[in-house]
Image: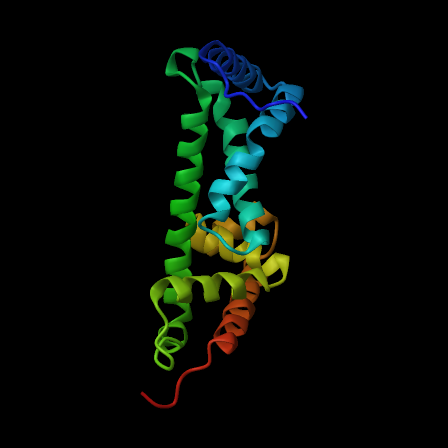
Length: 192
């Protein structure tokens, strides 16, 4: 087996230049360049997301959101902005922040069910977020999708209905069914 050597500065500079060129091609709509960019950075983005999102299915959806943002935003990337990796990790941080903002909104929509789940035994906020995240991961995809659009992305019911090509009543029904399911996973405590 050969000895692993740390990358030299010229190798790192070549890799950064190659990534910048790939990203420029992605910005021009080159799907092969996008696949190559994903192959180079997908695992790093997934590792970063998994440090914050335990449920693999939700983590995969966030990584997908990151790379959709790369596909859509690459046209504004300029080579003088430097190495694409910090740009990509910035997008990832923003998507994670959006995720947690949405989780807070979802917990608020669940009302006292989520808060009272903390009463006995007292659940730290991080554990509660993990429990809600796991519960969210267990919902059917169509329910997760509407919750994501409404609570994560901030769309209204009407905007969500238009985005999904569904009647507004169907969107409301899916949200209601999802919230009922989530609330049953967090039964109210009867004693303090």
